[in-house]
Image (cartoon, rainbow, N blue to C red; front, top):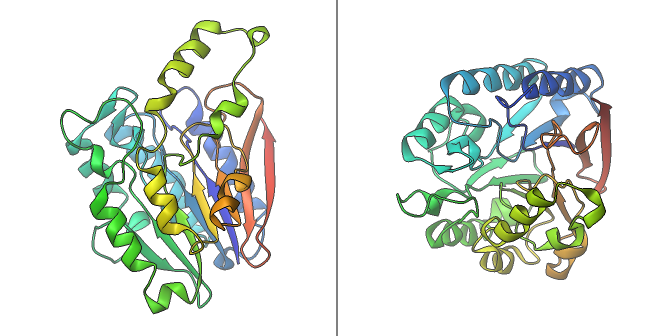
Length: 281
């Protein structure tokens, strides 16, 4: 089975809708396997800010993938529930209602949600905004799973139907501090932006990352996330926890405009190998 990883498309910002449509065209025109044997996982920030127009535009693109035969799954990011300034309960409900089929399928609307992909693979999707939905803690973008969601995750990983399969976990916020390895240099310019990013970095990483990693240690084979738009292979971090693959999806639409390539990954779940596809902007 092949898994396609998208993240941080931020539809509604600039020309990202057209960029994501190109990515969808590329995947539909050149699937890595027959679409019925491919799953698409989007790890959040599907849209740039919570509006009905952005949600509908994004849904149209996911519908195209589903109509082409792909199984499509989605977990929410902070922008999906609000905007860059914070998240909002009403916006979160609107997003869940619009994308319920892609998040929960026919299941109850509760995280973590489990999708049994076949007799060998299980996908667990988390909501890394869930414990951030109070009025005072929805600011910044750090992400917080919360003890209740972590407790359910721990219990789910012990279920016979799940622990007998190869497990993929998807969430939005990154659980590792790898970002320091890509700190820009003075010669890169945009110093004010880089200073702001550096100062706010502690507010961007998943708050309960340590607890998450302790729970999934040696029990998960693939960990997928996004949020910081770096698009790095973080498997060297995850292998400390006996998790073979950890992949940052980056921004599939090159949202930050730092590069001239749209990117998405294809993961071979049988071999646990990856391929990065790129499109020139």
